[in-house]
Image 1: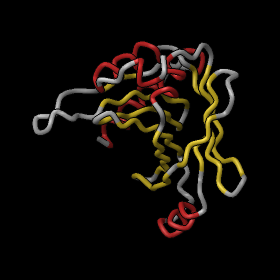
Image 2: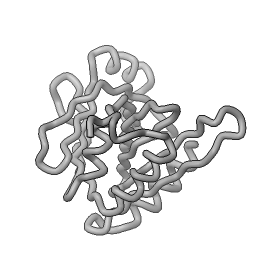
Image 3: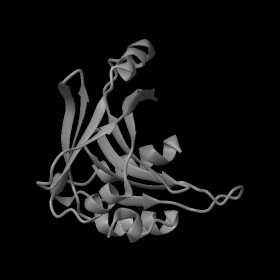
Length: 168
């Protein structure tokens, strides 16, 4: 799965910010019918995406930060780090995030409501993302939404999510 993320991130990051694109990867599991479905976009060395498996959806933020050791991350995760999102000019969404080192990248993973997935799918301009730790913001970035509707619709279909799950 890590190689998939790297390939998707490199592909998405190779586009200019104004031509940012969202990529989808999904499939079927040979074992339990519960394969992950992933959408991802990138900007420079940063990536943002959504992943679902079995109806559970997560937001994932990938940064190039290499400064935090596993011990530091363990402490950071005890003080309630947040992944904060702003879709277009909508109110900020704050999600509890788990931080981890993953092959030299700081990665934040947070459960996200289906309603918020629909908001990202329907975005017109951008999705802004920041990690907040101890009241301080780190790694703020904004991602274009070109191609997000199609890619997220593929993920929604692959995961069997319904508009009614989002209150639509």
